[in-house]
Figure 1: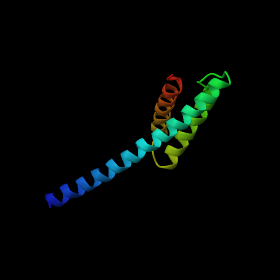
Figure 2: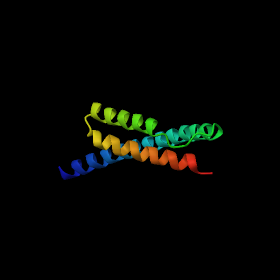
Figure 3: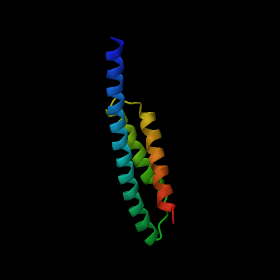
Length: 93
């Protein structure tokens, strides 16, 4: 019985690994889009950081997390991390 449990755990871990790869791919796509926005802002003389936009992103992630049965605080932490990654990429020159 333990052997089946071990196999099932390994199967689930492999599925998680595939999802992790998808998540990284999506973060990469998101970051590329943010980088394009950053270039547009720079050409317009606008600041990279926009607290109003960041607040909307955070609210959106809190809402998405709640809709998926996750803690909105976790959604907020994820949003802040993604914003940090985007700003880092937007300011790299």
